[in-house]
Length: 214
Length: 128
Image 1 (cartoon, rainbow over the protein chains, first blue to last red):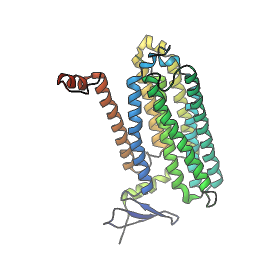
Image 2 (tube, helix red, strand yellow):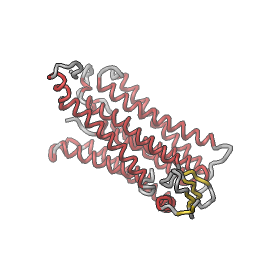
Image 3 (cartoon, rainbow over the protein chains, first blue to last red):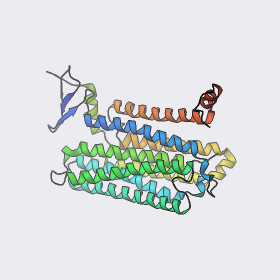
Image 4 (cartoon, chains in turn purple, blue):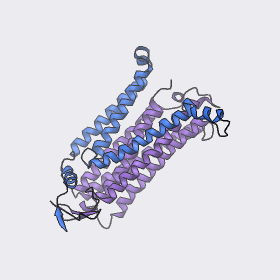
């Protein structure tokens, strides 16, 4: 397999084993993939700022509430189950990509829809948790802890929801054209976003829910 | 137009052949689930560990487990281990910047030297 390059140009055009043309950067990969990684890299800053803010206010839960520490309000078994569901959705996502790369459109669709379904279960769990917190008097503006907590986990929930729309959009958008090997880059990009959402939750689950104060 | 074999392109495409099999992905996911279970177990027996080894040891163990899980998802599920190195560098640069944001905020709020400096100079805007 050879790649055809224009030395003076920043971009290259490569042909894979099946003759598909890929518009690549001078680094030898697709512009779309590079753009997705740039976006994910910049999204690290958003979550870095939100996690930092939460850490600075993490001891303020007792302001205006009867709770002495976050462990008094968190339902760790429930959140652990949610984390497990999100981790498993990463597995179904890579299985979807693997199926699409094998030109197995049927299984590709099944795994993509399974991933979206697991994402919906996670979001349902988050809505349930927020409802319980609200009923216990922990509202967005109760104190700086609740503001930081709801902002951080809410932004993550929005990311998961966008991921679900991307997954469903990929399935719906390829209904006519088919989900063959030529769509593997699309599925890979959606997968990168989905895995990013997963690793952000890996951090949130440990730093916000599990690590003790003090 | 010249026809050349770019080393990075070669690496990128060769790497695709080294991607884990579906069975390997399932094993990786089981490993991640076990690590999550260990994290929760550490949380449950936190008091016992803190009594013998100190609360710091629980925090360090949880952070190490988090880093391992982060690395596994990034390396295998996001294919960073198999893709062009530039992507890893790009992602790590974002992470480094994010950690830098945390330490800058920490320095502003915890160590309070910015606040003290502004107040010492009689300038408005000191963080109260």
